[in-house]
Image (cartoon, rainbow, N blue to C red; front, side, top):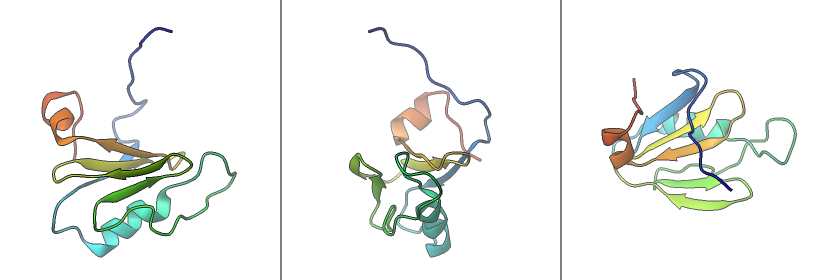
Amino acid sequence: MATGHLGTNANNSLVSLVISGAMAVADIATIANNIRDDEINGRPIYPGAFSSMGLLYVPNRGILKCLPGDIVAYDATTGWPILVSDIAIASGPWHTS
């Protein structure tokens, strides 16, 4: 097995939210309502897929705890959730708008 590189096809293909103590309920709902299961066809909505407590449920994989400054996002095409740490945001090729 060999390592490779990962990127996105378009800089605007991810819908994201910065984790903070002041996240709007509507923003949390937008993320939670768009997370999809890659093993089920269609667009199932996972209640609690993302919560104001910073817990991100990755379908069929488990739960991740988001910390302040982290970015939680989903791919607008597939609905797949993505978590990027605040350190990776600050020092990597990622950017938010």
